Image 1 (cartoon, rainbow, N blue to C red):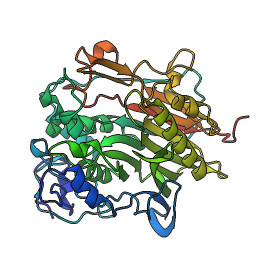
Image 2 (image 1 turned 90 degrees about the vertical axis):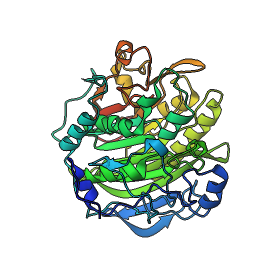
Image 3 (image 1 turned 45 degrees about the horizontal axis):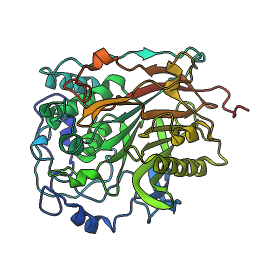
Image 4 (image 1 turned 30 degrees about the vertical axis):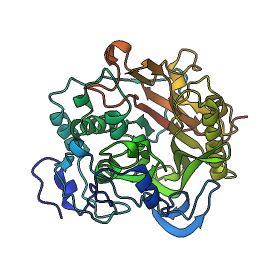
Length: 442
């Protein structure tokens, strides 16, 4: 058990949490070659049928599976120390943990001690007193949104949070001071953003602090959590890394029940790739309605447009297979690394799954994406692009509101990340309601 806490929200530390800050190699640095030997026998991909949030033992191999699946939210590796960026959780976030190896737990269950999100938000604000005030954003309401239903909307948040190893190591944000990327404070900025919006469903990319931060914190706030690392994460090439980055999916256990989960390793041009996706079928406890939520992160860089298109096609095929014959609608969140002019965007927009991009509804004509979802400065120059999307089945969902983006002036001349915003990508937040008539529009 942890020592008695001395600050707000520290009830999180009153249960046993596996110590996750030592490498099984006995070194804070995990080299790619060494990781390859360890990772080979640890299959992560496949399909799991769930009942009452427990796996039934029945498994079906998905098209992209590379072996028998592990239960939801399992990663069989241990993680390495993040060096001087890893002052561990004290209170809810930053109390230093022991560095001795310990077994890794699969999921935080019934014995998690809850923490009050309001208290945790106060904790974050207190830790960030010496930083500039965060950018203020407001919700906008689409012109063609339908009258709200008597049921609570479903708030969905999509965000590439910037892997710590990449931010400090290889991403080269030339106008961002290094101390602005210090994990000891940056994690508070990330959690503050999540706490301000309190999503029912949270989809994250570039997560390399899942086990020591996001899983324990969000589980204690009432979320179910799942994580799928990239098979060959670039984080592993960075000295003093914290293990591989990947996609993470969280949902509010009070509102939803997990029925089915599939971990997908995306295929492109008949090759298994380094990009992944998680797809989960949920039941809304309030309405009884079923839907599938997916999170993904496609291949980055210019010149890889055809590759991304192939990955997107594979994801669509997987989602078609998951929902085929059931009429289950979809919510798909991701950093697609693709502008709206790319084929992968058009493939999603014209899919037989009847998808629409939620943020198009911010535009005057309802057909144009925002001018940017990421804005950064690297040695090669300024980079301002629209790469992140929340897709939804428009026959089943209506968009009630979307979180608007900050202006260029609000972002500032040094762009992102910065002292008051923790990632080079802006978060996307949408409120969805089920349509009264979920039948497919003809």
